[in-house]
Amino acid sequence: MSAQLAPEVMPGVVVVMLIDYLRRHQAWGWLRLVAGPAAFKGVPGLLFAKVMGSGHGGGFSLRPSATHQGLILRFGRVDQALDFLRSRQAATLRERARECWSGVLAVTSSRGAWDQQAWPLSEGVDLTPAVPPRPYAVLTRASIVPSKAMSFWRLAPAAQADLGKSQGCLLSMGLGEAPLVRQCTFSLWQDAQAMRAYAGQGAHQAAAAAAHRHGFFSESLFVHMQVLHMAGQWMGRDFGDDLSLPDGVAHA
Picture 1 (cartoon, rainbow, N blue to C red):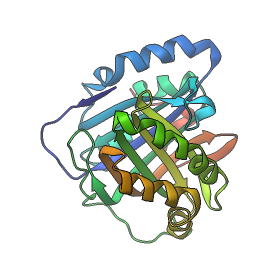
Picture 2: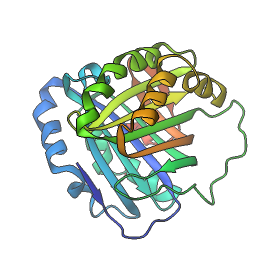
Picture 3: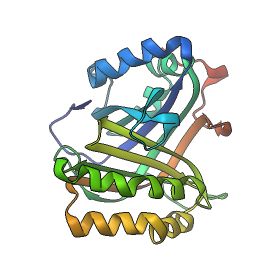
């Protein structure tokens, strides 16, 4: 489900939230998916929003997950992104989750469009190399030509398996706006070198080459991002908390 919440395309930053709802909040989470971006209309600085489901176990498969969801937002400024993650609205999502990872990310390269909207590079963001280095993230999404969907899905499982076991991959999740034909992948990497190594070899390279050669996609977006802030746990891994959330309680 999607909404373009501002007509202008502006440089900004991206917020990603990956959520695995507790079983007792599964129905509540499903209602969030049905409500979609309408629930975020009043959020200050919000330019773009997607609320997506996921495959089984948070993977990239035809079997849907009853508890895994992803939220992708674009804001005009870093402070607006952080204000959202410190808000009661974001805290409510975390409180109902078994696991939740949140990140604020700067776009460092972008190719293509999402709902006919390009993602420009982030401006006014300090990308000075940090010690230790900040992780990198990759977001890919595509609208698959319906007649090519089965060809695409024959290649997808091997690429996803390679992603999950690739050296330097800290987390990954398959997401979808619509079954079969509107797919998205988010992955987090310890550094740019590990990210490039995965992209240039194995099943992923074969799938990318086939997609280009056979015209699988009617629209696609490929984005590289640098993590500015992140917090939470995912697949049993603790990613710390540099969002300055006092005792896990968000500001009103």
